[in-house]
Amino acid sequence: MPCNHWLFKSEPDSFSIDDLGKSPNQTTSWEGVRNYRSRNILRDEIKLGDEVFFHHSSTEPPGIVGTCKIVRAGYPDRTAFDPESEYFDAKSTKENPRWYTVDVKLIKKFGKLLPLPMLRETPGLEKMMVCQRGARLSIQPVTKEEWDIICRLAY
Image 1: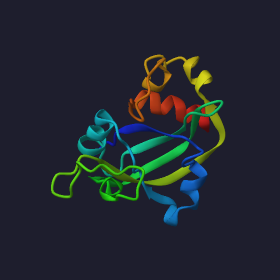
Image 2: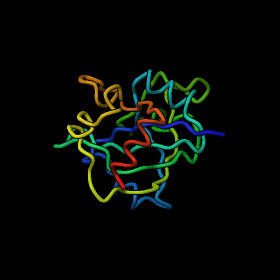
Image 3: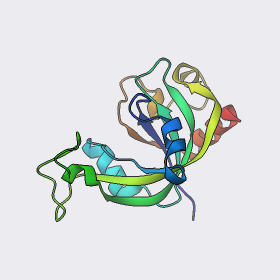
């Protein structure tokens, strides 16, 4: 069964690829996503075994820093139920959850950052969502062709 490909954005000051590498089993839940379009992707589209680019955003320069794999498909985000969490949502209940997460496992940290300006100049990536100005979605689809191009750049 073919896997899908995705790009997950994270601010390295909040959670970096190195933080993922230090997590137990190099695995974590990708919690705190509070955008409905991204939520729908997490809940409905991402499947076990899908591959993910880890992208550092809100840093200079932003860029792709490695790859992960989905090791648990969409399930309710527990931080939405926790009043102590910055991601708490009083309207989200265990009976009717609003927010979802997936578990990701680090596959490989690249030896170098693939900076966004370089990606924008790479033939074949012109339509990639992360390369579009103003594309702020934190969970983005990546085509197989885009995945292959970026992997060639990284290795």
